[in-house]
Length: 344
Ligand SMILES: Nc1ncnc2c1ncn2[C@@H]1O[C@H](COP(=O)(O)OP(=O)(O)OP(=O)(O)O)[C@@H](O)[C@H]1O
Image (tube, rainbow, N blue to C red; front, side, top):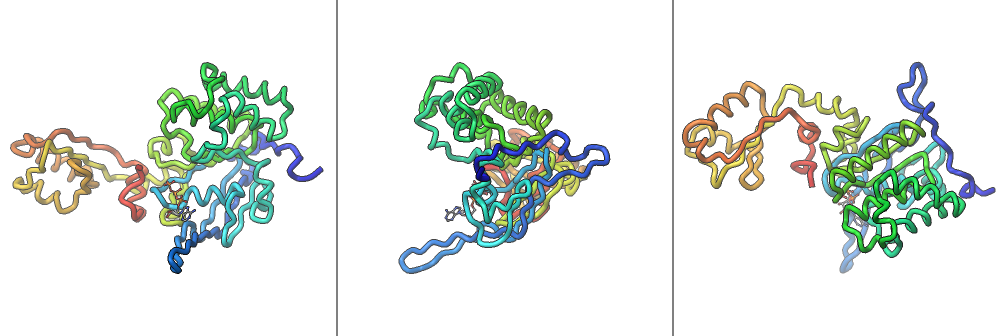
């Protein structure tokens, strides 16, 4: 029997991290991973360092996130982990297998939901899921049974006979997620899985992920821009910036970096009233996005600022304001993230 014919190894719930006195089993280990894209145009070579010395340790049963702005190198990292892209240097080990030397093994260790779904577009939802199951070694009957279960679980039955190409973006994404779940793999790699989905579909995705983790010890590697999602679903998160991991911790641990700070958002009706001295002082340090000004500060100063802008001419010019506790976005900026923020 060749390696690729063997059934996918199961990660059991016993592999869960944090079991009393039980060491967490390692699902994925990445060391010093690097990738530079080179392109030649009109005799000139351009180089883009997409990953630069990345180390990661993902434990079995974890929901582990990669968070970072556009172009940070997350998809490049994931494509190397899934055996689709060869790194320039470094190692990737998944459940004890060397994926750089044997990229062909990745397909039986992990299910990958990438950003593009064009390969399945001509198939109906049910065919896409059944075909994926069969490609992963399930018998036709087993693939059919698992597909039926997954479509019910995700509320996709009404769309079962529709071709993916004729679905909305969010529906297509959910159908691709369904296909990724058939012919279970111990590691699920999801690159922005909930993009374009409505809240009902998002909840269905996270419930399905939770169920697999609880019942089968599935490990999840999730690429996301979505700070709220990251804060709610991830056990740990690696913050990626310019091809490097600049921090790796629990969402709570990362937010503790900015503990004590608050974020004040001011939205002006039109132009900010810079003739008001407090507003003029703010103008020098606020981040500006259109009519929105954002200031990160101490609670005491925030109270003074709120008092200053909720009276007199400043108040007349103010459309809205919010005072919020720090988010992962604030932690990213505090860590020195160079892209002004994480949100797309
Ligand atoms: N095939 C390629 N050829 C050349 N450069 C590339 C290629 N793919 C990605 N890059 C560049 O490598 C860098 C990292 O890209 P990557 O897609 O990994 O980032 P990302 O964090 O996944 O971004 P996004 O959140 O927008 O998907 C970017 O500067 C990108 O322009």
